[in-house]
Image 1: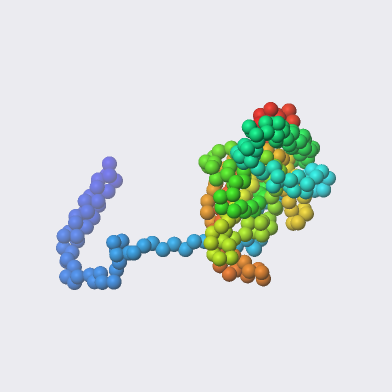
Image 2: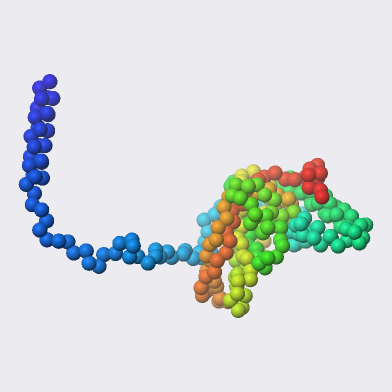
Length: 280
């Protein structure tokens, strides 16, 4: 009880001295000079410097595991080589064969039958991926692609139309990727033609590959990955970034925008038993 009384008296004494000090303080007699200071209404605009990426420096991403005879499907390169053919969307197919619907119904039906036969062949080839050694760790791979603005192409159309978080199938074919980001630079290119007009849409796809996934991976050309046909991915992000423009000597001479997309691979391999859900 005595300690509480001493503490109370101390607080009262210090509080009264502080109050007296504040009451006895002299007001500022000289005006402060605010000349030269700028307030929000006077600022024309905030200025931001867009970060320009360089891919020439070593990356910190975890590389896909690759071992000959364990992680590579037979026909690895031939799978990738057929991608342009398989990348035609159903909408584009229908547009191409529409004139035959009434003029030549047999031809129209034949085109659809051929499309379905392709799908069966793709799913049959997917069986090779089930024999691969699963990836022992989470890893990352990259793919650089480009199209003419307005060109119909399934992977661009699907990715651009999707919402963040959606599960998508960007292509019927075997999506290809590189172990290293810089290896994809040449496949993107600039969005501008030689006259400076914006004619192209370059895009980098960053694939997040989970541990346990069975993808075809080898060390050719610095490292390659091929995904099973009709693979599913989750769209994690999609944004416009800036990449340095390089001349023939590899020196930066400016920059240009590109679309950066992050897709998370869903390790489910479509097989021939699932064919009905993919037929036209």
